[in-house]
Length: 124
Image (tube, rainbow, N blue to C red; front, side):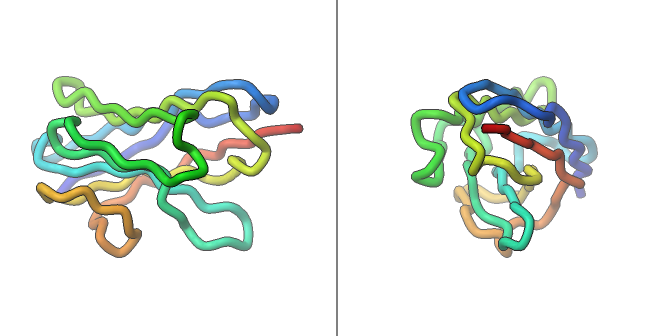
């Protein structure tokens, strides 16, 4: 089992940047594929980005490609999401998620563990 805690959210103007972090504790971090998801008010939770156990493979939803970068530091048990050129439509609660898998899950139900979320608000 793994515990996940997100941080780094906040209020930023459109065009600005934020870096989210997800600290993991518990079982060995490197066995988990990791993902970032977000949920805006009144909407379903949606996939943002995922990274494989070693960090060698990554996937992004189309709306964030070229603006967001997912990365991980297995020595620090930490997942990151660098978000640049932020838009008001990026406003949401952002969640990190983990699944012990060699695959790269992009669907909510394929993840086993979730953090509590961090709020990102982008003003126009």
